[in-house]
Image (cartoon, rainbow, N blue to C red):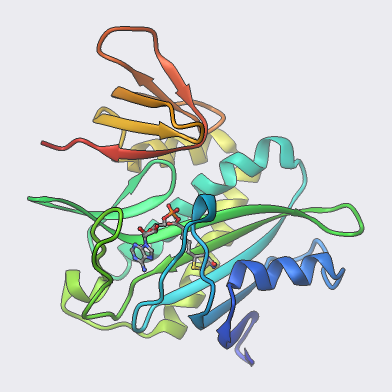
Length: 254
Ligand code: BT5
């Protein structure tokens, strides 16, 4: 079903995964490189996280994916995931909830005891049968839940738990879609402006971190910089700086 006032987003009751749904659309050739297209679902039966992990439904969550055509996927794809983080943060800021970006694209709320995950982002790259490349930017925000899953890798939270208010998900989906389009335009027009904005909002920078890379390599040190390719530069206490492309990074706040 689509909203006649905002046809760019297709609203679904239940789907396996909003990312998988858009991927099928792209692979079946029903796409062009015009305006980004999007879908949102009330429930996912196989919500996906990174590296084969799962994204769990919470009550009244916003789960939205946006497919954006890339002119040059080689440099735009890795930075698209940072643009998506900026867009999710824009939308969350407008809800009045204070949050920060944890590299590369988790949005978390900082508490005295540590931090809790409010939003997760999964970016995937797909090529359509006609050869165009699309970034599928899938964003899950725990919005209206009064209870969130327990025993996760890190504690979860919701906008409702943080602010005490509840939110209109249709309105928020339009805000999020527009924010994604606007941050992706920023990336395409001036990637340094997008990077500067990202760095200003990336809480990880300057913090003591532990990064576990895909091959299991474990690196502890200070997160010194995010380079122009979106990679995290870590300076271990004793040793050379390490450049991390894809890793699970935890902040050591205490
Ligand atoms: C992510 O992966 O955080 C990416 C999540 C992306 C979800 C969106 S929803 C719309 C679109 N369609 C999809 O199928 N996916 C995207 P990762 O960094 O790997 O984190 C996954 C981990 O987060 C899990 O292993 C859990 O520990 C935790 N987790 C799962 N569900 C959660 C939730 N609702 N709130 C907070 N943490 C959660």
